Image 1 (cartoon, one colour):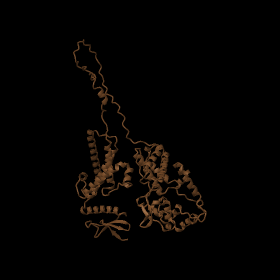
Image 2 (tube, rainbow, N blue to C red):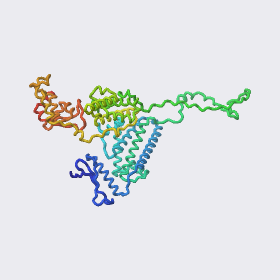
Image 3 (cartoon, rainbow, N blue to C red):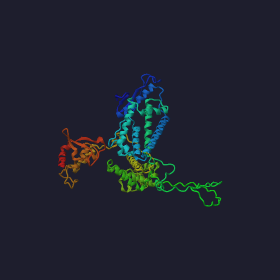
Image 4 (tube, one colour):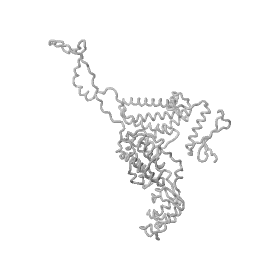
Length: 566
């Protein structure tokens, strides 16, 4: 296939894949004349490929104009991060100090603001300021924020802060203005002894965004602020009660040499009593009063017996996003995971470790792939299910058959994804859940198109026998659809197999058709696939119009729809 150039310099399309093909500057030795560098971007999306190509063009220009230019080292970037994080902590402490004067130090709105601004900087660090992410309902950004712990009411403020900071950063890059943020970036680069180049600026900006996000989110999580240290202040009630009474008589302390007496307010005319030697008194330091119990801020441990309760809370939170089948899959997964935890002697969520996540993954490799179809197998514990699966595989091998143990790649990915949802829900609900990762455990996602190729495509000779049964050729009556006869009833079950045969859409899209989804478009009868009260659709691309096949028009499908409509 030939190359097709696009508007972005050095970006070419070869077949479905974009390449970056640039001329190597003459100043570089050993390249010869008319030397080119060709690099596959492994991208088929034009927008993403354009962004990568522009960054590579900027890097090439920097190498050409500044031959001795060097990339920022990890130590320099770590220094920028540490300096910015320290500056942010100092600023937060200064704001706390100022809040003491107004009596708002304990105001939870301060931590809410820290958290919201922190999420905005987290988006800037993750996506950069070049990409304008979407906050619309159902968007990837919105779902990621909710899953990470952000609240729905936080999203308008997060979006406003994100867009404001993004506008400032982009204006700095275009040279439109020199904002205080750019001065901060240049100051951090100078502190890290980093040369001012476009690439170094981008690296410094990314570290500053990361430092601000980490510091602000950590400040929002610190519910113990302010920390009270030192002596306990006197109780105001006791001070007020004692305001009207005379002060207590001061104590007299004796030294070893001579007593120290308090001077009398009035002369005492009574005879002076004899002086009696007094042993020196050892003064004991006052006993510190016990501090009042501090409010609980630590996360709670969730017993395994309460997993089902939290699972139902999660399903309730996702009721507008999950179908019944998805909720059922999550229930199955949590039940398996609880059995794995019980097998390892875990009592509550705080004892879950990476070992238990790995044990669940290994469990999937040693069970029958279709165990879920058997109620008896579903009721077994994980250990018993593995033993029964091995026994059946051994029996099949002894009889010359072969049973492959282990769930499919797609099923394992779905189970681990559901586990991720559940553990994130527990953490967001303030339960103790140690760190976990699926890196190295989750099977790779199949390439686009591979799943479609794996699906069985029936041939015409495989489908033809379906239409030879009395249901379509004629039956005796409605009550006896399997007995041949002269009556053909045009009903939903009559037309449905034809839709699948001619159009091949998803099962629920046709099985859930409503009469108002049969419409006329430009004089032709069409099927409007959309979400309805009886079914959802997979994604926005699933909103579409499909033509009603001519064979169904001949078989009076429109008359059938009009009869139902009336």
